[in-house]
Image (cartoon, rainbow, N blue to C red; front, side, top):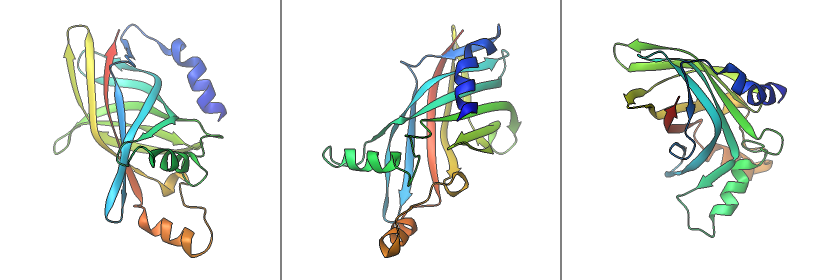
Length: 190
């Protein structure tokens, strides 16, 4: 938790001449949780962030993701609050204790088969693991546009497991896929 708070507090001090801040009004993030027979999906907010752009590619950056902003979009409106509360509960993100996730980009490279790849570390529930995913980048006028359609995250690696006891908890754990996906489309400005 302290590392996430430090990252939030120090974020402005990392600003360099070639850093671009995320335009929060023009950027968005989505999530998808595959389950047996379908999936749940929705949106999640980016609290703050920046990327360092050297004129050709992204070389570094940090995203702070607000886990309390999770919204469900696949269920009827009256059912959405229940699943949103469950996702924020100790079964999943435990947002009362861990309100933010952090993604730190350590570098990028071109993969002959996958195109541009971002490499870094993702922290959820104070657990950090390396992560890599393909992304696209476009510079237009004074903005940089970065899109990643499918970033796969192993939920169990971050301690995201159903805590329910007995048969019900076991069945719920079996219904949910071992990985969830996030995607983002961010607009960055100097």
